[in-house]
Length: 194
Image (tube, rainbow, N blue to C red; front, side, top):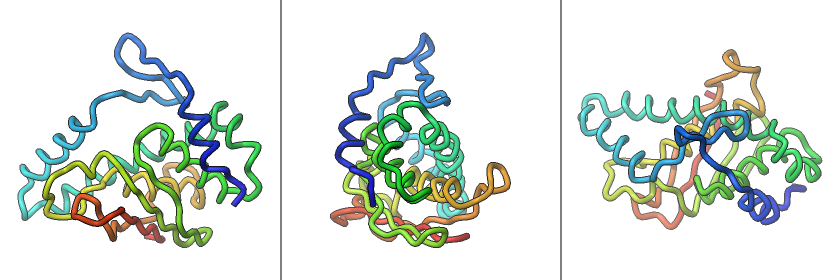
């Protein structure tokens, strides 16, 4: 891997990004909002509580899919941005693998999750390890709760190895195999073909 993760995190975390009058940040070619993590965690918890045990699987699927849609479009905006190309671009030797590693550097730099790829079989499988993420703050969930990382991770694999949107969306699935919110020291996400 040619990507210097620490340099990516350091350089991209220095960027000054400001919101507009509506609180949205028009960065990376997409509109991003800035709300506290407990807002999103509470939102997810309310959806799951309302769904109950009978509809929990469906509700979780919808939360993950919403994160995947967001991750796909935001991820595309990130990897095609001037900022990404100026910091990560010079390090890229292997496409799309180095781009994926760079994208997780951005993920960490922007505070979404301290996450990195620990295994990558091009076009087949990716294992992501996260040492911190905002969904880890949820207390006593019934199941692993990191819908955002699950959705974004599968979306990143779609971006790397599938056709353009919408035909290439949803070609990968992600399973959370370890969870900080369930007591593990780190979380692990395994992405494979759907």
